Length: 393
Image (cartoon, rainbow, N blue to C red; front, side, top):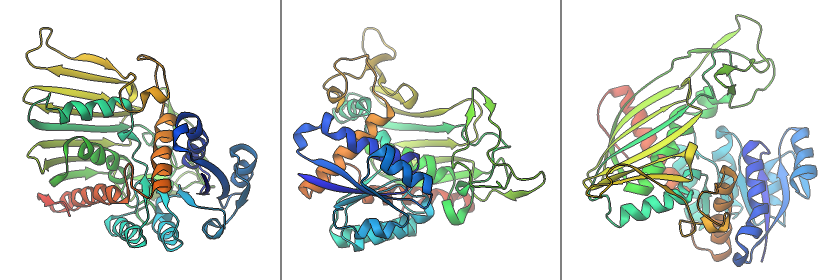
């Protein structure tokens, strides 16, 4: 079965989607789906050149509506910046095109609700880029929790710490402005953490939160800069396209957030996230504690799961390596100890999406899950302003 793919925005994530589509045939041959990269849209001529010359698309255009109107496009990937998500997703729904969209879906809850509603009314299957659901170690963690090996779940700790904005010399990008990004770490990082916790433990019922902006001003770049200014080995890289000295503009959303939560099942949760932490590179961790044991997963060691069960002879954390039988591990590696990588997680996402489109049945996280994560972020933002416990919509 051939499925024509259209891509909206040829950035880092658009390239990751493209590689994932190309890899599906090798890792999921039984799907019987052959994704064909038809057309990519990007306003930058260099990106359009890369789409056809490097990524394998037949055509490249400047406008996303040409992608949606293309007769050979059956499904689309939406990898544009946050401020274009609602517009492009609603246009895809109106065109009847199933779509795979990156998170956060909208700049705020209302936009995420609009996207989820439009997809539901159009009867579309969808996918949302919650990559951290897909490691085989997380599949094993979910089985352990569901089997009751940890006992009654009492509390959860989620920490998403990164350093991609830790340099005060890094320029202002769209991610630092509310009209383009919406929130800061709530949408960019904690949307992943909220979704992962809900996937393993269940829905969050209410939250109380605090957040702050630690680098309150940044230089306005002379030309567009990467959305994620990089730092390396603890040393800030030179600012990309820095503005003349003194040309500083305010950062409009949060660098850091701390959230206390109550899950519907009764467990308590602690969520923490920073984009300006000095030291952690991509330290995305979840700990789940129960009356009989606990487990821990860290994205930086994503092929490992730490497990402790009360009453075992050698009590303490044991390292469980992902292996065949855990999630989709066997599709990528032959034996435990041989690691998978981030691109493999996107290949799993692509396979879920293509299976959904081919069967007309939802597989993997959908826009409803994107809306659920946005609802937690919205409640946390409101709580940060009122300093009160806030119910999740």
